Amino acid sequence: MRTLSCETTWKRRTGIRCLIVLMAAAALSVSAGPAWGQAAGAGQPDGAAASAYVPPLWSAAPFVLLLLVIAIVPLVRRCARFWHHNRNKLLVALVLSVPVLLYYFAAHPSMAVGEGGQLVELAAGLPVLKHVLSAAVLEEFVPFIILLFCLYTISGGIQVRGDLAAHPATNTGFLAAGAVLASIIGTTGAAMLLIRPLLETNKERKHVRHTVVFFIFIVCNIGGCLLPTGDPPLFLGYLMGVPFLWTLGLAAEWVIACGILLVVYYLWDTAAYRREAPEDIALDEATAEPLGVRGKINLLYLVGVVLAVALLVPGEPFVLYRGFVVPPCLREAVMLALAGISLLTTPRGLREANQFSFSAIAEVAALFIGIFITMQAPIEMLRVRGPTLGMTEPWQFFWAAGGLSSFLDNAPTYAVFFETANSLTGGPGASIMELGGGRFIRLDLLAAVSLGAVFMGANTYIGNGPNFMVKAIAEDRGIKMPSFFGYMLYSMGILIPIFLVLTVVFFVLKLV
Image (cartoon, rainbow, N blue to C red; front, top):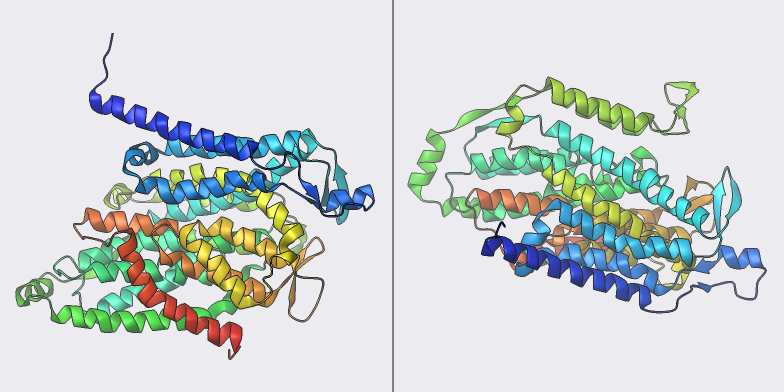
């Protein structure tokens, strides 16, 4: 009979304990609160009541619990090893999805949904469950994860090599280039592409921590607000009906935020450069070599992905030939084909040199399948109760969406406040965007939610996926990064004043 080592036994027992706690919390979330929701239209005709049905508060508990697990469990030492494995993340996400699916199958009444411009009443039980699963998985999760997978895979085939002299102007140029690339190939793609050559450039310097912190601020977060390909929240907005190029209208906010950060960084790095030992500076100058790029063919594939997202909108006429209506899944098929071609044509050994693996994107997929399922109930609540939350001004949406995005994942946070803003919009108007299906949203609220979710993901390590990835790579190179709360001292001292400036300029005085 095989015996387990003490370490293996400890790992398994710790994992089982963590899972038992999560399952117990999920069970409590089912038993808490009323067993049935409340109809906002009580006393109205049956159809009206059904359309205004509000799910019970407990139905949002699995969503909140999953986000708290993502934020807290990695920081708990006894659970960290269990959480390290993607299969355990997937298991937790699915366990917390079960109460939501049971609720929609057994407790939710009939549901009115829009089909072909008309309201269709779905019977309670299996029809409602199938609709919710279709919306959560097929319409939202699958396009979302395919886009991230393709950007991640293709960018992993591009290697930037070289060792420039680590002058403040050089480092500032890296960050500025990352801000632009983040909107095109995504914050994850840009971060993975540039963090290693940036660290290689600075390997002779001792004062590097602040460079990684500003890299997280700019490349992993704020830089990605100009296109839906830049950050997951904006791609969710694109899936919900926001035009592909609408986010270019956020260029003024992007310029001001990135501009202030780059100036502050340059001054900071100049002071740090003067503190470096003369022998380190001499070694840095002596070992400098020009930058080179391998895998350039992948740049064409990245452009292809961006064009596919912009031009191939399912159910809409093709821009270049209006007689052709884009069929379902064509956009995703084209993107996956480009990712597959990238894997086949990238020079052998290049991805290994980049230390490329699918572990990071597998982690995103494992968690987000649960997020997309569990967030269906709170989104349904906000569609009905949104106008009663007391938020009406853009600055309120900016800080509410941003505040939650600092500690919870910014994609579902965006979705929640997007629906809240949608519920406050009555109909067509000069400052209102049509989303399709008879839905509208105020442009000022949409801008506030978009900027809050994207920008304030930089406030903590857990605000956006690339943050932790960059931290781990830097620490692997021997750079002592700030602790969780130490990093927040940087963000509170640098980012919060910038966000206050943006609030006054764009949402209060509306000077721009």
